[in-house]
Length: 442
Image (tube, rainbow, N blue to C red; front, side, top):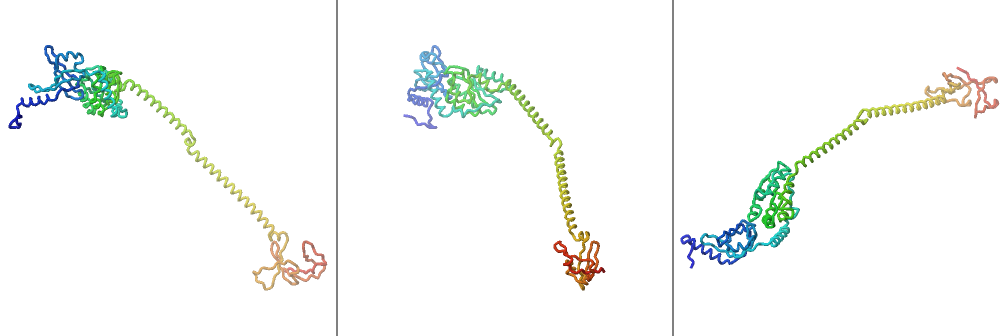
């Protein structure tokens, strides 16, 4: 019967340990897969002690196995190898520890490892971790390079030496981790997180030399691949040699076939960039000189144009043209006035010639009959026929230089002066002429 347990009636340590041992014994035998982190098989002892570690987590389990089982396993039962063990969990009462009593150890074959990697590859590809659209381009000249590699490894030397040879002032922050074995994945994940949180690190490099499939197995681990995909800093993978393609190569932003190539791709070559800058400077200088020459020729051509060489020339030409047009207009107006004056003179001469004064000047006279009692302003009738006057009528005879007054008298002298009446330009015969009347001049 189980005794009651309380603060007043606590169980002794042996009771708790025994209860745990009884519960563990009920678990039965299990198959467990992991990576051997430690193998201790001393000669002269019947039991070997092993440590089986989970490659994806910092979890380990103590194993005990017959020494013959470990020796019969040969190279397969070695530190760093992946194995599948069959055993029964047991709780050791003396030390209060849990271990797994192993009765069978199987090495995980290369074919099985490759099959698991292929299944993981398809899973990560389906999730889009291999999508080129999510990959970022590292900076052209990073200020600080984060390097995750083994301590004093050839990969570290290749990356640092090649990058320094190309750009002597390059800076590194190096995180040394295990690159194979049970501790590789958690250490690399921790180093990635530390470098990703550093604001001065512009790019992170995972570098490791070549090795077997088992040696490179940590770089195909799902935990590491997801940690690389979650990094905000661009990650460069430089694992193994050209034929080696762990899964982290597909997840990383840039894949380099070797650590040497990574050192060359991280930074530009100083000599090449100096030569390129010198060439660009020369091209810029020539382009600028050519542009200046073209602009100078353009300015010279502009200054050579008449409008800029003598700005007043156009104004003077227009002023001369205006003056010429003004003189032409004045001459045209004067010619018109002259023609009109000549026409006016001709008209005036014609009018003068046809006027009474000119007629009188040629010897003609205007005879008007004076009426008695007429007002001084009354217009006198012009005598047009001899029949319009009779004896005694007073006449006013106007000649070119004045006027005289005459009276009509009775002409009884046959040999006296006659007054002819002209009709149609034909003189009447004397027999048909009326009697002539003598006019007396007063």
